[in-house]
Length: 134
Image (cartoon, rainbow, N blue to C red; front, top):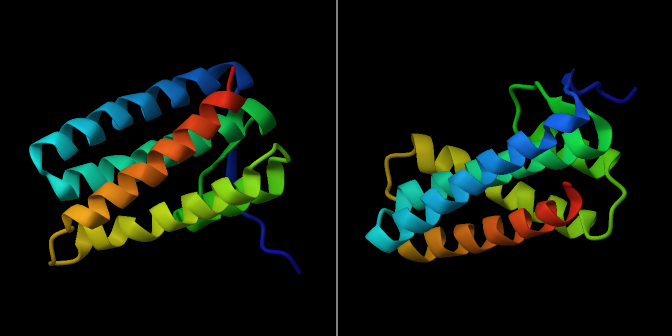
């Protein structure tokens, strides 16, 4: 039996709000990157991707994840969105979500190379989302 992922219904017309949130996180990640704040850049990149994913899911399916597990959001993307590039986008999202706990909860600091890679992945995911969300 397939596990049911908890979701919340959201009016499709509100997808742009999630995209704007994502764009705010994008600006913050770039600003943090300029300042050498690697942890802040990485975490803003993760939040950029989460909001981008919400924007796509809301725009296409009228839902967003309400699960406590961030990985469930990637599963929803893969199962609900049939747009070009979804497989690659889902992989990017999974990589970004995997960084969240490391950045927020582990005692070690995020490295510059990790921050730059994470920001690059978030940029690509956001660009993909912007093509799908009106």
